Length: 374
Image (cartoon, rainbow, N blue to C red; front, side, top):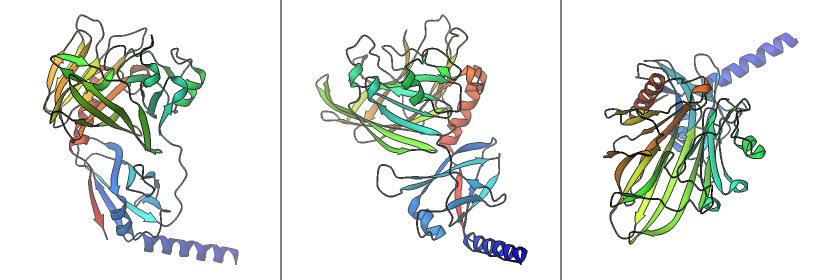
């Protein structure tokens, strides 16, 4: 009797799942390489397509029936705005995703971002591959003051921000990596500054922060800078930064308002080391710049900027590589910064770094194709 009951229950569950799986999503990879990334679908469209009654559901890969990790992105609001789905698709292939009205499997977060008041107002963010930080108000005017985005050379899939700040001993490698990247009076890994009369004008550090979403597969936050008068122009800046699981990149959205002029001259920058022949490449077609730093006690960092669809002029200075851009009022400037650490075991030389960035550039310019099936 127990066996018959179990079979009946199983058939009932299977029947229920089949009924729920009439609708599906098809995600198509048209690239010649595998795509491992996060796709975003408007929540209301997703909800309507699958006739969802609430926000409790699971996403399954139709063929294997394996659960797919997703996140309800709220963008700082009280209700979901988008459904973020982590996908892994072979070259020239597609996957079909179905939805069931069951609770999703629990998953450890692969992204994290937070304000760090205990370390002079830092703001740090990371995923399971890389970690970055921006400097805050409390660092201004001190002997440690620096300008741009810092990179932490992690070589673990663990999230390390809280651990490293707690110990304070992150300038030595204890098995998970270290912070040896030097920012100083540069823009570090892809930060921005104003650029008047051929001179960089660094702004004050950010004054407020707001976390919009925090994992498990994307973290997004804002850094807000107080209005500042520079060269007789009152300028306000806000940066929205996001990081996805598995990616070497962070996406930066810059919004500026100049009360005096319709556009503002700015530069984006990458710190440059003292060396006779720096190993860097500019790819105009793919709109990215790659730099492979010189070795430092066995450690090597690769950095990058991807600037799709932006008119820019390249400037090579003794201390940093710069891109001069005219930022227009109330128009979002979007670009991507990236970094890698040779000891992380993923990207160990310049050729591999360039190959990664070429694929990343294509992913940005040619998103995965999403279609809805009933």
